[in-house]
Image 1 (tube, rainbow, N blue to C red):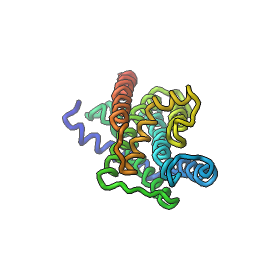
Image 2 (cartoon, rainbow, N blue to C red):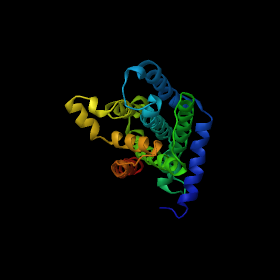
Image 3 (cartoon, rainbow, N blue to C red):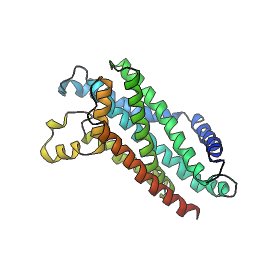
Image 4 (cartoon, rainbow, N blue to C red):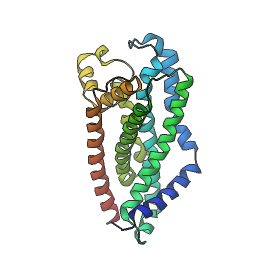
Length: 252
């Protein structure tokens, strides 16, 4: 690793961020789908769904935030694929910069872009009636969980971004991740689900993450917090390992 790793990564992150700011439609597009979904569930299905809470938008917002991240990381894979096909990586390899800095630049850009999308979605939720009694510490906890979740999914996105053979293949991996919150406690309590579906919903990572964010918003003890953090860290470590292996194969 170069001794100038942080400086190199900062410069490369600035480059990828400039690409994002020149095409803000990607951030807006990332936010539009979760917002449309939130409008649909609250104003069309919300009256028929019994969650035991006062406000359905407050109940479902944690799941919508995870869907926002899952849809946003597809652009990370897209940008990586475009750079790979454009020969950018080969040009960087001939320069005295930290090799992993190129990947970290894309990851940090994904983090910034997704955080902007999340702020937009929360803003719309507030207009729709979302309310939280959470204090600063709880909001920081929510932000921390979302950052960790975004990093974990972004490193997953790096793998198809490096290894896909088409743009469609680079971004298609995100579809199962977007669908996963529907098989969790994000939209309805898991005890309303049939046996096998309920077992899967209660033992997959999204449920513990959603429950943790929901408890933090409600100023309640977050009983699933360690499970949620364990899932996020575990996914992050495994995805990082596979992503770096794929990167080494590409630049070897």
